[in-house]
Image (cartoon, rainbow, N blue to C red; front, side, top):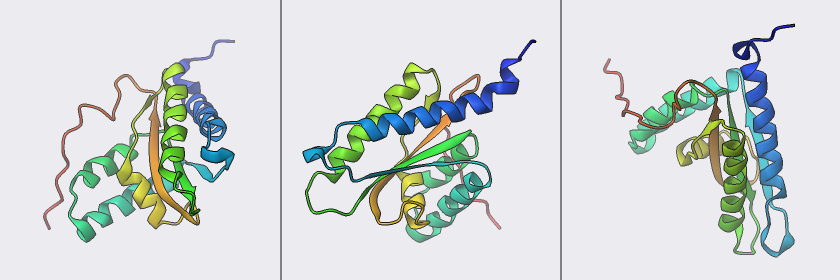
Length: 159
């Protein structure tokens, strides 16, 4: 049997994303308390996330959301990581360590990623990680060139 890499790339990237989620889950947690929530966004939900990011530009005017929304559509999937509300003062540290662990796993397995505040905020507003704050997103890709770097700003369409 001959299996072309192009035919199996998508499933491979999803497998890597699952390993990233495991890495985030097993990352050290402040005071040993696990308040991290993690999910993978795929398929039509990538468009939902991108559309939400575009809509958010009208709310707050941060135009880099347009560029990031276009990037989301170039990803095979997006990992979202957040922390549940809990008064222990270590939530941002925990989510940062989890993100770092997930991205290190991606780098070890040679897939491209970028941590995005913008897509995380959109996922939070969509309530994809209920009860979470400090949500961040990590789009994942395996293409000839990393689509998440050397990015040009996107402009709003004039009507």
